[in-house]
Amino acid sequence: MNGDALGAAFARALPAKDRDTLHALLGDPVDFKALTPGAHWDADDPGEVVDRIILGQWFEPGATRHLVEQQVYYGVAGERIAWLRILCSGFRPVPDGEPAED
Image (cartoon, rainbow, N blue to C red):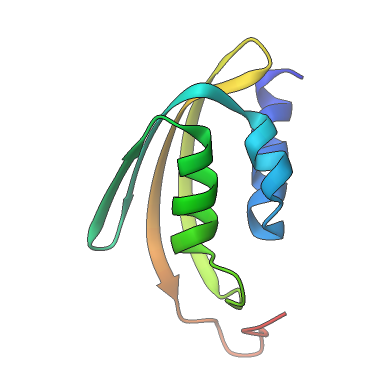
């Protein structure tokens, strides 16, 4: 899978909360850094990135999806994402007429 395909796969797996795909996309180790409102996240273990941060804190089980903006930069080594930088706006109000939940 090339870099563009890895990025697209990550972008699809994130809102789907697809744990297995997220794990498969990240290198081991992975150089992960992120900024969210009020927090800085730093990890190098793909399990910590996926299970504790992304699915454990940001998009925890049972949470409904609201509008969130994320800017992501990443680098590839071989067939996996080797480093990942995420800047997140936090949850934003959903514009009128758009559903706030699935």
